[in-house]
Picture 1 (cartoon, rainbow, N blue to C red):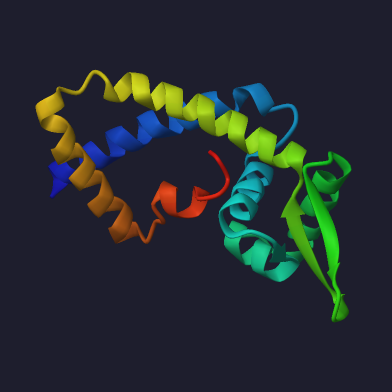
Picture 2: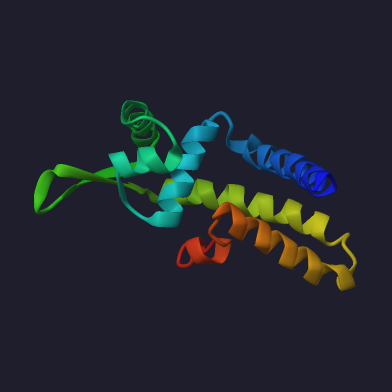
Length: 151
């Protein structure tokens, strides 16, 4: 079990480094939590503030301040529910989607260069292991959440 945990920790360090590098071009534009907010909106579509706060793991007050900043930056937009003006939805703008797409493409390129070094005969095993790990963690496969977003 220790070998498995050590292997996952090593892989996670690499993936964190890849994620950090993929965000470096937009670091002055958004914080990590703001980027996670954009990803939630990209993956789940429009959200109300409470649902968004829960998905990102922040309080509604923190989400409000963060969304105010993202609206000012033109990355998300607010819209009222026609049947209940008290209900406000938050969604990505074209600019927000472009930022998510840019970061995702950079991350995919870097991961691709790493994966290319894995022998063809070993790739199926790696795929199976990573899918099992993501399933155990409750993750959503990328193709499931990005459908229609052209990421």
